[in-house]
Length: 633
Picture (cartoon, rainbow, N blue to C red):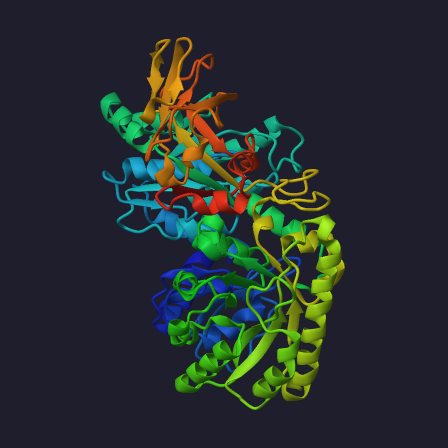
């Protein structure tokens, strides 16, 4: 059967033959968030995974259309399901998307490729053009051999302009993506060394990427690789006049944004997992808006890159993730008494830390008519915040043993000085206290849980603990600030940053110069006139202030941002929405970027200046600051 015939056959067999209206394509069983009966599942096969393992699970959830490898035998109980057997399910997915693309020959399709900047350019173009076009664009950073067909499948009769990213990791891949996207306009962002291990040179990598533009009428590349200029070139190619371009760019680029590198996040997860045994599970903390980086997007990335559990602080955070389609188990660390019924409704797992919280949860489960509802038992091993103590263990075991409403999934505690070598004796004491309590509880619950195949887990290690006390990883570990690139291995204190290239920075906070002007000698800057100039200086204004989380204590030359590679001190008091910086000698111009913290200006510098830790800096960045997410290629 020819590949184009496979695409048509899939549309017919998976849809019309069974009166199914296929609207959605699915490659990851965990991401079934749409209507099951309108979903077509591709059982992709890799060296480590076979998607066919999840057919039964999806069938139970209502999916009735599947594409599988032709050597796969299907259970006869799926009689009302439709199966298409193909030689290669990934190729079939790509062919179906290419077929969908062929249905809309009149759409303007922009293909965007490069090593960095693809997602930023795509999102900027969307914001710049959305008032004039009905736009279909790649979700997040869907630019791979799987992501591209899922993106192109979104095309429909209303799609006037399509913005699709395309990324590759080895030769031969781009030609496949070109057949799917078939862009009419090509955009090239910066091409560098990133992910170049499968290419002999940057030039070879560039030539491979250029294959995306085989049939393009227009190819756009800004030699300076500045996102704003690239977008301006695209707008010119689409026929916009200069006045409109500049007005919209000024509106779009005069922002402060937090750039979140999801490739770096996934790298950091892999790093910490490499310190653990393969069977040790990993809980990733996404509380407090995922430490200020955006809980939904971070949770989606973690779900795709190996997290076993997620944990949030309060119920609302967990509900938000459930509504976004997150299927991983979610622990609620600080469950509110008034939210217990909502916790059960959304299949969230509460932390139980006192007899009162235990009784409240038993009552809530009984009222909901459920049994063996999953909970996690908190042990106070010495931090003295929340949790049961050794003296509570007999009573706790007795109460758990006499009820059926709840089932203990894990017992855990929290290390308070795992990052401080001077307190290692106390850390060992904490681990011993916890183990005494946990082992007593687990041993006592064994007869009740025998035959369930789900033993009670124990866990105590946090990010610093994983690096410094790996031998106590037990059944699971909890990863928090380490996700974002902060290492404690041999550091001896908080916030020492990535060491030896093991971890990578995830978050970069950037702003944009609104204006640059000369202010004369003897003049003062800002509210209160606390900064006076001893000579003429070039003063720029950037749109970030204390309402964005930029602390007022950073003003009056206490902190410097980075512009054109040079440190530029803050002048005067930080305002609510703005602050002034000294850009003398940088040749800075309006529209230039100002890095507040990131790869080239570690967040620890700001934390040290304020006498705090990186946690506080990240979580203080206001939600009005736009988060921009991207994967590298």
